[in-house]
Length: 137
Image (cartoon, rainbow, N blue to C red):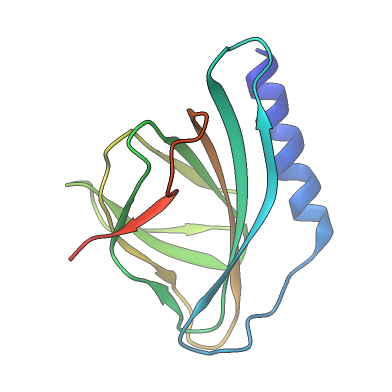
């Protein structure tokens, strides 16, 4: 229950913060917003990343740290996403999805060519499990 409150409070705080604009049309901007050990779960940490996509921008296919469970929440705009063998889907502001440890995120991009999009990615993972994101070839 405490974890749920932390995730919801983090999502609300970043939604209120307003959009960050990427300067390169072909890239996303990633900013670490929080990194903290989870005091009641020894060996685990919470990391929150804000990912800002310029219009038409996309992340290359990737996976994450081996122990990472991820919840992604769309703050603004619309994000097209496909994880593992799941269906390709467009998530709009206020919607989210989760990624289990070891998932391959083959599609992650701004669904719009004219408007920016932003998401919050909340990781629960083993402390010091790095790197957070690993390109898939």
